Image (tube, rainbow, N blue to C red; front, side, top):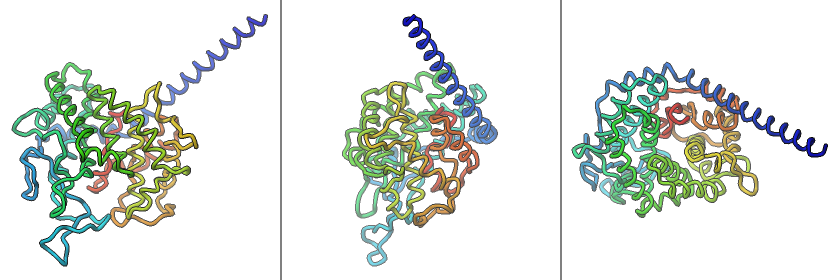
Length: 394
């Protein structure tokens, strides 16, 4: 009799577990369907635009202030300005205040590239039409494999400062825009329409870039940054490592999230003190939360689920979402100082809400996401929103 009771209890436990698992699967499927329904019209319209675009890479424009060559990505420190007391001398910093005279052509070209691939890959996921893959390949070859137009796989000359530095590790944040290129490729990778030689060439490019990110002093400096820069190094490195099958680097990034990023940046209430002390605390807090949740989305598996990871004192990424959600739903409740620039443009449809909704089966996160702007126009917001096509991340 005792054995029968144990058997019945075991069967009930298994049935309950299966029922819960089935329920969770149904909830996730429903949320993904809501995301598709919200984005479908906009995605197909953006993909129609993308089909008409010609490739524009870093070779289209050059800057005489760059110490690099035609194939080298170049950008300039956003918050650095000419010194009024010494107009021909080194630039000086004005934190949070973007210099409108900076060279931004390469950054704009990379953002445009990201938008094109993200839109085409999203439309392919919705429709299954291979015309989107064929169009994407033209841009992929131009950026990564065509010797006339490709970009060199490093950021040696990013975020330069006139009279101070020809490039800096801090500039590595510019290539977060390449994540949706990689994620878009992963969404299209299973199709026979994707040219395997092109795919191989792109993976070789990113393998070289990962080596640079993990070995060059600029990469090491950025990895060790204590704020959103360190998060973004880890996020993009993990994304590129997953694409190239580099499990060693993926494991390193997962461990870094658990042992460095989460305990070092998030408070018990879910806030990010390193971002709150900046001149744009609202935008930087949102940006860092998006980056951390995207890292969770990239690396989480059943065996190593970063969404469920907690520090010994109970801090986790869910608290970060819960801290910011009320201020994303109603910005007027923000209790800290307002951002010195672009305050009026935040928030938009932050990916942290969509990712968190699916990860935690939380409809309130998704409802907030659905009500926000899915097509921002402010260039600063777009630059700080590397995940703009959540369909290809699901």
